[in-house]
Length: 339
Image (cartoon, rainbow, N blue to C red; front, top):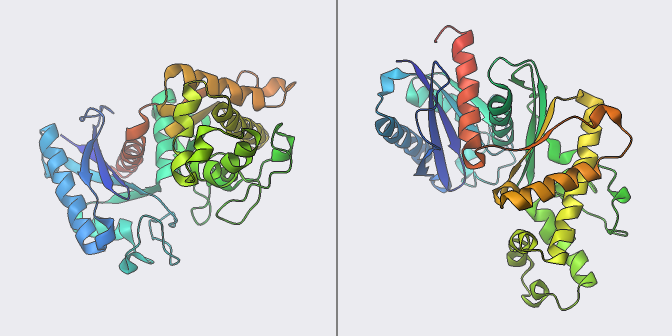
């Protein structure tokens, strides 16, 4: 048997999946193992190898069956898998600075390793789940979390760009001034830009801009009594799903920002599909539908060319990173004759 592995390295957990030559996943969902990124590269890489061995045992296969490994992590990192010299959120230990995580994992495992950032890996999985391998379609994916990730897939491949900044969709500017109900707001992103997608459609945006703004419109709201914007921001989605007016207003702004962003992508890529993933898609089916309908409502009317482009919820959201990393490794293995 020849298989590839997908390894999704997060700040606290590593998720694994395995896929065979027939594109069948051998693990239901994913296998999870603790991540020890805070202890530095040596400890973390050993932990990654140990977790892979356990995942293989769970699937009833052996290490010699694995011909390639796909790795994804949060950024910033180059397209080749070299972590930023400025540091990265999930890699706080000083030895991670400028670390070639892809190359070092390949050396440790003795197998070729491909690399994607977590947003691109999720986008690749979403595209594969909808269109299958070897597709000619183009899709745009946005993943909403603490920040805003995503990716562009064309002809079955991730568009990475010159240095790996392709698909960093959260930092695309949107004409947010046209969104009703946020007059006077100046949403600022961690990157320093005002009005990019992440500054409006992310958990950080709720804490930093949207919640403070809307609490002034809803004096006496329960979230305003906590005195803790960080904690309160995490409660907005649950309240919105229950019908809370202020919380729904916040998510309506996020949806309308996504609508404006997708409208920009129509002119850029003329895609076959849009996908939305992240925590927002872990809500009830009813709330998912409401949110996706609000995105559609945020796309300017009268554009015939965008009316039939479907907007999907990202399938298997928690496993998307590992599965996308595995699909990238599968593509490489086929192109190089390993499979």
